[in-house]
Structures are given as structure tokens and as C-alpha cells.
Image 1 (cartoon, rainbow, N blue to C red):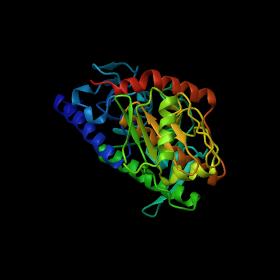
Image 2: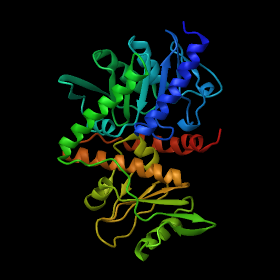
Image 3: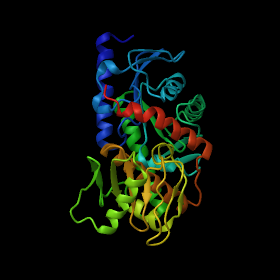
Image 4: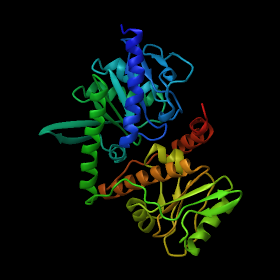
Length: 360
């Protein structure tokens, strides 16, 4: 049984690890979650909808492994069931990190059952847990099944979603996440036959100030100003437009006419379906609740009510484009059903984005 002082140190360690993963790009904003076992029946976990930069030790709720009840002012992360599933099935799990790391997530969209890799001349198999909607018992059961059947690994890819990695301590869990991402990146580069980076490259962005469009670059061409004007006129809820010209987004903007979600966060944040113009001068497709507007061979304009949300959309879009390219070159991908996409998108708009934007 841990003492109060030991539990307090665990709380502080979870926050330290959160900030470290944030710096490394393995987690973003409030996405992902981190936990640490207290004893056989309880664990600490990051709360739902709170930015990692805003976390304080006492915000972390204590969750019961036996019945899922929790103690504390803040609700546990929406994926607490996944953590419970691992703690209840793997005695070697003392610390867990659930990430939306880019390349492992892309591997999880290919319909594969496992990723085979080598690390330090040793063969490793990373299982892919079957898909289910985030936050559901079905997803937790699928992760638990993968954890039990693959007791030689401490990293599990979650189909179309992300990854969950664990270890005897924080360092072990983080190293597992890094090891998985390195193996996944190597695999994605091999099937794409090229090194497509995960990035955002800003083109010509803008924002609304007192109802007027402010272009962030003085050299914004008139044709692009017209694009911004069209977006703001059709989407009164948008106050910031981030123009992303990353390699993955540019590739999609000139080779694809339609994107369906391969990833949960794409369905939640970008939308359930994105149409892409297929010729110069073709009309823009600006729709309610679709937060990306492609222009032929010119990348995409990512929309948000704030600068942060527009940039977050740009990050998610780039990952989604990378997943689409990977699936195309792999020869197949596991697209998420329209029903599930609609359900996730509605839930995100009504609940999660409100939490993420609130000031605690």
C-alpha cells in the first residue's frame, strides 16, 4: 500500500510525463491519457477535457479497478475503461500512456492484425486491437483481449485510434511508446516508398477581428483572399483559418477527390466526409461541421473558432492525409462506418470541445 507521500509523487510524475509527451508530440492538447497504479484495486488517471499544461496534482481522480467508480472533483479520462482493462489483466502494468501518436495510428488504419518489427536485433510483434468506438466497453474489451493474448508485448495499437503502452514505471511506458512509434514510422515509410513527414506548413492564414478579415501575411494573393472570404461568408462560426501546405495535405489536394475518415479524431474534428476539388478553379466545398476546405493543388484551409482549434484541425488533417496515403499505397484501409463517424462527430461537438475550451 502506497503512502500519501508516494501517491502525491505519483500525481506529480503523471503530470511531468504528460508535459514530456506533449513536447515530443506523442500527445496534443487534451488528447490521450496517462495513469499510474496505486495498488491492486486503484489507479490515478488524467481527467477528462483538461489541457495537460493546466493540470495540477489534485485534479487527478482515483479510479477503482473493480467497479469503475472514482474519487475526486474531476471526471476521469473518457478512456478510463481501457486503463482498467489493462490493470486488471496485466500484473506488469504499473504505468500506462495512451497516445494518438501519428505513425502507430496510421498503422492501425490499415486493417492489419499486428505489426512485426525489430528492435535492437530482437523481433517484436505489436498487436492491433479490433476497432470499437472510443470510450466504450467494447473497445476496452478488445484491448484487454489483445493484452492477454500477447503477454510478451507492452504496446498495443488501437485500430483507427491510437496506441496504449505500459510498463513497470513511467520510463518503461514512455520508452514503449517511443519504440512503437519508431517501428511504425519505419513501416509507414517502407510502404509509402518515401519519407512523408508529419508536419504543418503554414501558407496564407487569416483571422477575424471585429468582424473584419485580417490576413496574417502582407503578400496574401487576391485569389487566396477570395478563398478566405468565401469560407467566412459560409461559416459564421469560424473565426480563424489556418492554411496548411504540408507534404501530405498537398499530395491529397492534387490526387484525391474525397476523404472518408480512417481515424477517430478525423471524424471528430475534421468531419464525416471531405470533398476535394479536382481541377484549378473548381468551386470550394464549404460545409457546416466540416473543418477543412481543400483547394486544388494548394493544400487545405483548416477552420476553427479560435487559433488553437484551427491549428489543432491542421494537425489532425495532416495525420489523416498521411493515413490516407499510407492506406492507398498499402492497397487497403479500414474506413470507419458513416454511422460511427456521425456519432463521434456529434459527441465531440456537444461535449468534448466544450470541455476542452473551458477554463478551469
